[in-house]
Amino acid sequence: MSKRPDETWHRLREWTYGQALSERLAAQVLLADGYKNLDPSHPLGGPDGRRDAVADRDGKKWIMAVHFPRGQQRISAIKKKFRADLAGVEANGADGIAFVTNQELTVTERNELAGMTDKAAELYHLERCVAVLDQPRMGPVRRQFHLEDENAEARQRATITGGDTYAHVMLYHFDLVAAVAQQFTVIKDGEYPLYNVTIRIVDMDTGQQLYTQEWGDLDAPAYYGSVKWRLKDENYLRAFFTARNGQWHQDLLLMRSDQDRCWLAATRVFGLQQAPDLQHIDNKYRERFGEPVWRS
Image 1 (tube, rainbow, N blue to C red):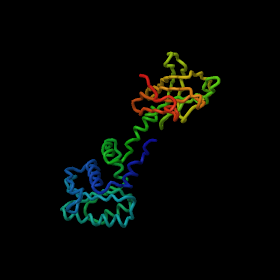
Image 2: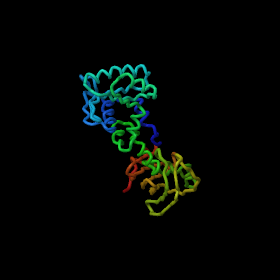
Image 3: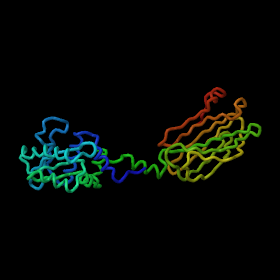
Image 4: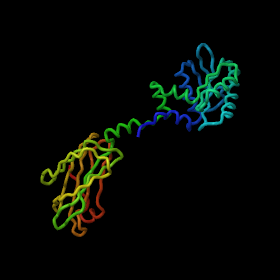
């Protein structure tokens, strides 16, 4: 899942962070657009002298007024707010007003608002704010005010590498007479695909290499294959995995239980730095054989 290209637009219009943060964000917009000596009033509340900030630009004094409701409002409501903010121009001896809002304004609506005063009026409407904030140099501001998906880049990397996904193997469908497992399964644990997977399985009692395979890419939750995997009464297997996102190990203990007509399993997966260790023990394993004893 990647970041949508209009993330800033959506998060501004559906603003949920309150007045204080909207004033601080608006200050960053104006500073990025050439305003100097910007002096905020009281973003956290208190008498503000009929302006949210004062600033200089082109040798003139400006007041900043901020209007960030949640969602798009009627133009009548926007005009009402703008008219009230205009009173701050004269009250502060300013030359103009910079009105910063998260509202969409058509060209006609912008002209109507600007025509409500004989002073200079700069209207930082939604699209203009987005144009300022989406500049590459404004990346730290977007992240500070949560205007972009902070995890999108990490998810994109994880999609390419496999992230914290790992896999483990299991044996199923036992034939007690022939002493074999009849199904070999590779199970993917995690959200992301795994790439360039290789699996090597060793009998830890004999040191014999029982299985090696380049599996390639793993995307489905599990992969199954028919086998005739001969088993002893007690088996300690270790699987070594490598993939694009790293390497890890799995210990698999298989203990024959004639009472349960199967080999009961205890397994652990460990060693992938970015993923938690996994441990699974069949329900009857402890009852029949006690706690599994893992080897180093």
